[in-house]
Image 1 (cartoon, rainbow, N blue to C red):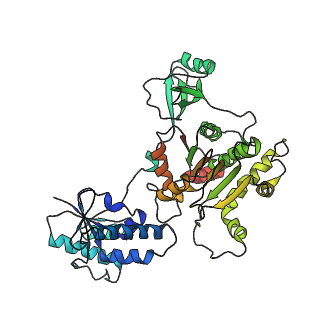
Image 2: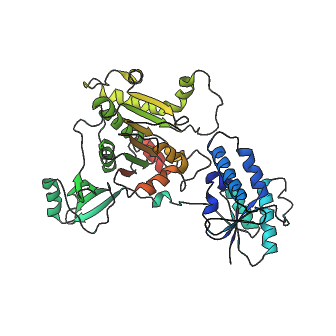
Image 3: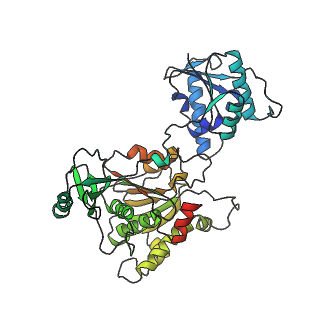
Length: 439
């Protein structure tokens, strides 16, 4: 029997194409959801865009000759209807003036009318799923990707080999491994099966079909040296011009942003490979916002971009007077020369960004659509680095399993121009590492 899926407003705001992802089952959009979508359509953010996209999609179906009240055939074979619905009885505590409760009442009425038909309420609202379950209505979350952070592709692995193969890797600068099913640019710790302390680190090159050594800059990255194997992997990916997309995922204090900015300065200021280092981050407050900020656009952005300034100031303090082009200049002088630009993601739509080293910090707060918008801005010779932690999400419309960063890592893991590293060991301070593990 065909199932009946009732979609909540937040599902449509998360993915306006959700109606095409339930196969040949029946989809029901309550009229109260259309009312809520109408209130979002003037919003200039992501929710407004999705609301307008959904409204146009439904209107095109209506123009195609179908009647939404009777059902419009979907490309997947399902049937979409917009229903007022017969309201079922609800407990006194659930007031009918709330949209969520009216959706519950419609689900109750549909279940009462067709008791043998499976009726499923699809919503990203946890409390609505709890209320539905208490009323005996089957409810589920909408999870198009559903990749949990602990199941995410880590980008690294460990293999055990004979002792002579480790020596061969050091001498020949390459090692052919069979039956390992490695992904492009996957980083590998090669361990001697007889002596665990006899190890080497390499990267799998799909073009050469073998493991190749990591690039290790003798002077570090502006005075920053890797403190563990994961950071060594990250530095190799950040400095490799053949890898155009790098994603760094890790908890607080693992060095994601610092390493990315340091590598960007090396490639932009020292080597001149890229015309500009562009650092950006989404604007989401931690906790209650303090309201509008005074001053020019630079003044307004300073509090939001301060974490980036902190990392750059730390790097300038680390380099001192080592003879680099950037040493002694300071952050502001690099910005005046056009070598460094720090801005929010608000105005990136429609831009084309050629020959730049683009770092997007805190990208776990972005939706899959926003990630697509950012990556498609890349012009010729541009490198994009995305950093974030799926357990530090401030955006109320995404979660740890369905955010843009997780979505990108899962989709790009088989591509030769991308690399991903999960950093797990905190190096900021002993206190920071204990806080990340214990709190």
